[in-house]
Amino acid sequence: KPRFNILLRDDKTYPYVKLTLGERWPRVYVTRRLRKDGSAYYGPYFPANLAYRITDLIHRNFMIPSCKVDLTRFHPRPCLQYYIKRCLGPCVKDLTTTDTYQEAVRDVKMFLEGRPTDLARSLRARMEQAATAQEYERAARYRDLISTVEQLQERQRIAAAEGDDADVFGYHYENGMLAVNLFHMRGGKMVDRREFFWEDLPEFAESPEVEPSTEHVETATEYVGTAALGCPGEQSSPAQSADSATTLEATPTQVSPSIDGRGRPSPHNQFHPGEFFSALLKQLYIGQPYVPRNLYVPVDFEDREELEDLLSDQDPGTRSARVHILVPQRGDKRSLIDLAGNNAKQSYDQRFRVLKPNARKIQEELQEAVGLPELPKRIECFDISHIQGAETVASMVVWEDGKMKKADYRKFIIRTVEGVDDFASMREVVTRRYKRLQDEKKAMPSLVLIDGGLGQLHAAAEALEKLEIINQPLAAIAKREEILYVYGQEKDPIALDHHSPVLHLIQMIRDEAHRFAVTFHRKRRQIRDRSTELLEIPGVGVSTTRRLLEHFGSVQAVKQADAAALSAVVTRTQAEAIRSHFHR
View (spheres, helix red, strand yellow):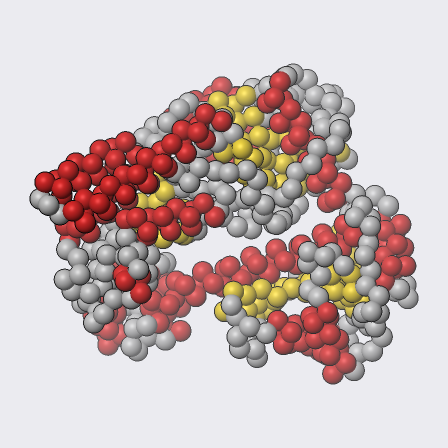
């Protein structure tokens, strides 16, 4: 096994555009889940909103829908999208023909595959045919579509002239802890940033496996620069990629440990940066449907050329150019690596300087800022996650004696609240947590921290009061403003200094609670989405759906199963209902 087995776990994934070629009436929509289901996937798209802009353009110009209407049967009337000319109306008999629809699908494929010249040539031929047949309205539509395609092609040329796609790496290593920053450059512009952290690397350097100290840290996404809307994604097989971004500022810092020109460590340094980046690049890019043309890394490593060959050859059908792994020593590209290193240093400071050194001093400052009766030894932080009230969940993360205590993390499924009500959800989760502590006769934490504003703070306070828990230190940190509200002192919120270690500590705990909640919510939503189609079948309930998914693994496999295979899991009546539903 490699010395560094870097298990990169990301909080979110880049979106792809999916064209459902296996359906009679293919649809096009954005997805973050890729499956081997006969569909064509294009992407990933950087930044994420580019995928949505592209699908919107397809709806407006090619009129291929993304709706979830059952297109295996006809309906009495079309929806609004047909009347505003964003859909050809395949859901209603005789509104369109199979030939017309498949022609539009072929156009969309050429568009998404980055073949604007072929698309414009095909459209021009059809425009001339329509004009010859005196179908002037149809010819005008083709004319407008040609104009749109040519405009997008020009944008793409401009983006290509500004620079190639590249990923730029920087890092900061100190005291056995490592921060890595990855910049995504698309069309010569910075569009996104990712950051990863590892702890105790000297110990891990002796071990065959290395797991990051934390999952990917999600921060606010900011789109920097302008990406050409016409830039196509690569047609992809199922894979995942993920990102996060933050505003970038450079400050002069020392970014490298003691290493030689090939990335080998000095005799006194157990960290192997060259070996680390070799492992990092392999696990980031091998098997991925899209690899940028240039990868800029801060140190060289022994198998760099072999990895270039591997990445260049892994998908020759879609790779437009050879992949280069470069170690620039001067010029603009070196400046980019230095910028990534500077940001890694800032990430390191925010992440680790509040965790390890001067822990007691930070505890004392937090005690003074919040007015705690004693040094805070344990902080429990809560966050709520949902999408428009669906699958509402909560998380609780724990900081204890200077570090996150993952063994004490807890997840909650909200049971008593319907719809969007963060306050009621917070009351429920705080009640459940501390009622359990009362029943088990366990001590309360030094501080209960809430991810939210005054409303969430008061909801948590009401829950504690009903449990007759008095004098419990309670605070909330509001998003965006980064203001700390202490219960009982709400009229005097605490605006901590931007560089305060106490603020960094509270932010880190809050962000971890948010990440944990979002991850749990996503898993719940994925299970629900997988189950929805089965739950629509008469006679199939939640327990039956669970058995089917556990046995077959996916809804697609259930669809393809014959009656005998289904009857091995469910009753014969249910098996017949399932077959009838999917094979009308």
